[in-house]
Length: 119
Image (tube, helix red, strand yellow):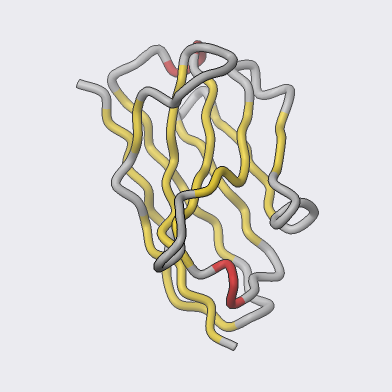
C-alpha cells in the first residue's frame, strides 16, 4: 500500500521559515518523481515544486522561486520542502505527490499539512 504522509506544518509569522517533510512508503522511491502542491481556501490546488527521480533537476513555480527548496533523501524515502521568507499568501494546505512518468498526472498523494502565515 502506497502512503505519503506530510508533516511539519504550523502557524508562523511572516518572514519565518518552515520545513515540510513527506514520508513515502510502498513504492520504489528511487523511480518516482516527487512534487509539492498547495491549496489555499477558495482556490484551486497549485503545483509549487518538483524534483526528478535522480534528484538532479528541480523546478519551481514563480510564486515560490528563490524562497522554497525541494529535496529528497533516497536513504530515508523522504522528500522535503524548505520554505523561507514565508508570506501570508503562502497560507494553504500543502500536499506531496509522486508519479512514475516524467509528465502527466501524479499517481499518489498525501493528505496534506496546514501552513498558516500570519502578517
